[in-house]
Amino acid sequence: MALTGTPFLILTIVLFVASIALAMAQYRARGRAGAAQGGSRRRRAGSSSAPGPLRSLGQLATILFCQATAVALVFVLVNNSTQLYDTWGDLLGTSSHVKSVAAPPKDNGLAADQAASGASPRQKVLLSFKPASSDAVPKDVKQADLKGPLSGVEGEVLVWTPPQYDDPAYKDKTFPVVELLAGFPGSSSTWFGAMNVTSQLAPLMKSGQVTPFILVSPRVTLLGNNTDTGCADIPGKVNAETWLDRDVPQMVMDNFRADNTAAGWAVAGYSAGAHCAARLVLGHPDRYRAAISMSGYNDPAGEPDSLTAKDPQLRQTANPLYLLTHAGTPPNVALWVTGRKGDGLEDAVALQQAAKAPTAVTTVETTGPHLTSTWEPLVVPSFKWLSALIPTP
Image (cartoon, rainbow, N blue to C red; front, side, top):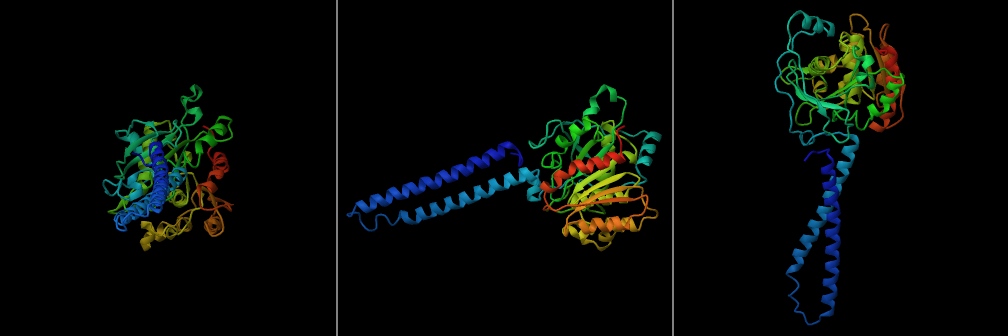
């Protein structure tokens, strides 16, 4: 039974109600037994002693059952609203989506990838898409499993096409793309579920207030034992960066009318996904034009369990501020970075102060907690900002 499905939620509700009913039934039975014992003075003293320990154990078991079902119900309700875990494997840390960790080919940017594809035959990564499996995701969101040929990662990718995509007037048009990255732990469904990205943006795309972007949300939890990859390529362990910036974009361009230039690609993320969005764009200006980073951090130690935080060299080179200040020439990218005091604002200001033209950094101070309830209202203003950079095709 799926962790995030409606059937499992119903099951937890039924079990919780059943546990309360069982506790009440035991309470009534104990009351009747007490009344009967008080009314019978001739009962032998030892006749009721044997069942006593058994009744106590039964009552203790019922109490524990009530507590367990209550905790399970609360967890399911919270998980369904925040979508931290998509599967049982993610929750228990037992699933790994890394099938091989070969060194990926040299990265020469998106334009070089497309030139190489045109110069020599390349088998396209054509996938069969179906409606997203999560009940929290709108049914117009498509899902497919991708076997990354360069990264060795296998995982689901969710894709949503804008209202104009199927409009005959746009049949010869390609569309810009935004990759949506969840935090850690986080689900590929969160942007479409808890963040309500499509329900917020679809009307604005129809009215022309927001560019009609293709929205793509790939899996970011790739390793077992609840290990955060830091969105990095780590020899012998994972090619998370190659999965996000090469395999996923190539699949999108193979299956959809997607822009094949860096000027038409952006990344958006929150929390750990915000850190990844900033470092992917600053590290690959030949693949992306812009980043939306909500409550992220520069130093990978902001997520102390990430692989990049545990390696001193990676901790330095995976830092967006380091990438910005050590770039040969200032990258032609733009960042929209948010945070509150003590939760990303200082890191956002540091990026803004270090930026030199043509790099542009816009900072937005927030006041809410580190939750999707704070980031959801930022979807519209951030995508309006992005639309000014990447206009309607």
